[in-house]
Image (cartoon, rainbow, N blue to C red):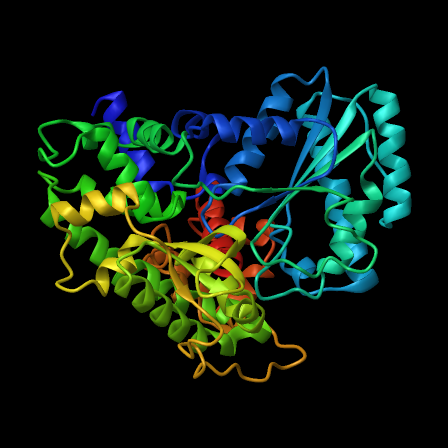
Length: 495
């Protein structure tokens, strides 16, 4: 196997930046000019919140900024902290603050060790003490400290968000730059955190109308799937730029979904309109709809909103299909009523908000969303991607559809009353749920599951509460297996 073939094979297997080795991360990831500006904002002074849905590339941007600072360690000390921590997720108030501070102390010391600094960072695990200790460390190093908080918010567990944003605000200063990733729809910032004055919010959704859109996805394909761009493989209907652009639009710019699409096409000898049709329909039935089911046990108090989200998705796609469009404007009153189901659909990649407020032909204002083309093709008459439809979708030839407050289209969607608190159901699922599957493409083998069960680890909760040391002591669990277990566990609970 050649180096390029080996790289292509690894690129197919890797779906998330968190699962990449540093070497492979550099080889596989590409950033558009727009994203380069985002990376510069993450490196620069000032607090930043990076907002994007599942698989949109938030972690990749955070990791790239972190790596670039490390390469130029003379200017700043970079600390990358993943908040995928079950005890942290399940706590709130003072308990959250203490556990957060303990994690931060641990990762600051790790960063100092990586920078070959013979300094031990210590502080009482309380925000005020941590703040003073970080300022003291900054003066001692004569360097700014940049704190990257990945996975700061969980879609189904919002109780700790107020505490997180309080900590984020308190730690931020001219010497300490805080950066964090959040998902669309995060609104519980607390009473002391002013999202627009205490941070800069950057939305990383890849807009199909951006001048960088086509070149970005072409570069990604060249890095991960060079054989897909072979002219002998594609039909005369489209060149490699059109193919990359169309696939990027089909998944509304979502990187993880883009990888899934390319993985399907990679197996084919030839790519034409029939093959693309089958690929998009398969994504709708085997990726997007199952994703809602996968999200359900992770939603906590919002678990019962999955059924209304299904119904809402169907009605949005039906309305858009009838208008022969790829985007839709939803009246702001409906946006307010259906805020959480819309947030779930955006998080899962069914829709992506392009304009927060736009005038409607039918009167009033609303938000405009673009739709993924996979679910749109699924309900298009004939369910077939023709040459005309390919061109129309590629060029956005039709005006957005509209759902007005008086249209009554969404009237029958009733939202259930939500409980005040609810544990994440995913924690009680058996560890067999983590076996390699469509939901978990890099899941565990049956052999590993058997090893865990012999050690009385039977549920996802029990696995999450087992320390790395305990896992390493098990038969056949080395560093590689440990990383795989932690990665699939992270996907199960957080993604």
